[in-house]
Length: 230
Image (cartoon, rainbow, N blue to C red):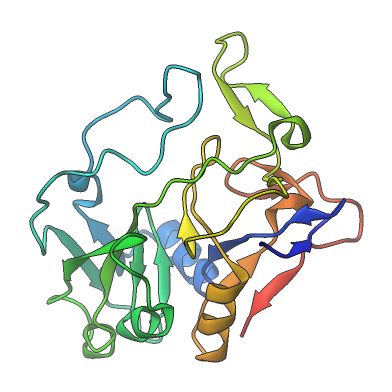
């Protein structure tokens, strides 16, 4: 059973993210419009949809519409900024290094990997052997009463959740998964521990500490959510 943590005794699953220094690098490159960090054709793996996609009950559907046989190498990665070699890169898609994949030890029931064309990137980037990480497990483990359901957009009748509180009666059978109402995958403490022990450049945050719109928000003054990472 999942560990009880976070706030109000929430079942804790971690949200995976890049370390802040790498996120700042992306911000610098975007503001300067240097073109030194680019992920091309990232939307080619998914069919066009109104964002975010919903099911008939108004819940956000993830993962995205996974094509049956996506061509490897369709996504191209161009990184020409020295020192930008995170083991986990989130830029519309999730890109992970060979070291990340080796430490994660995910099964085919949890995720798939797609090849990336990084031939125009720096040698240090090519050495990371990035692949697209595509989690495929879906688990409806959200505690709807505690999560704080809201309409999205207002008045539409479509629902999303404010905080990722999970039920306490679940039997965890995957280490990475999507859940309705939230757009990013969650990982177990076991997976976070493996990746952290491997010394990889990746961080994990407890999203139950704030409203969830892709960023942390509504934090109590002077506090920060629990963080795992190197």
